[in-house]
Image (cartoon, rainbow, N blue to C red; front, top):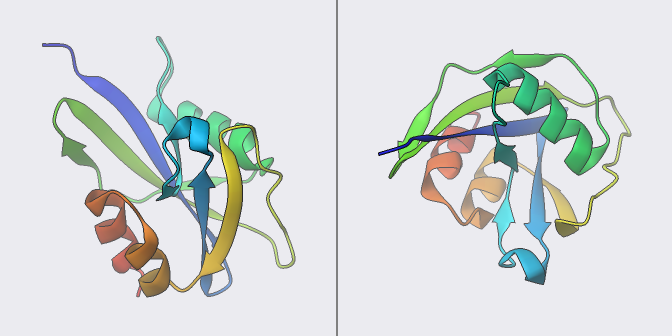
Length: 122
């Protein structure tokens, strides 16, 4: 069985966290910045790429050390601190976003595993 590798990036701006709404073509649910690790790519490189592609943000990332798995998918988690006043430039995958407290964001997220990681910031 082949394991799939993905990243989840938690974007923090002050005391708020970014949650993204995936567009209807992409199942229409709330999530954090996330995506797959491409062949030959490290988790860290994938996290930086996904963050830039999905939001336009390019900052240093901190590995959270809170990896998780669901099924055959292995996910490594990162934190990105956005500058004050920064707003994301959404890509085609997303149609809305919100800044929330960790608890509010966790309650909105579709998948329980990233919601648990986000609750850890509350």
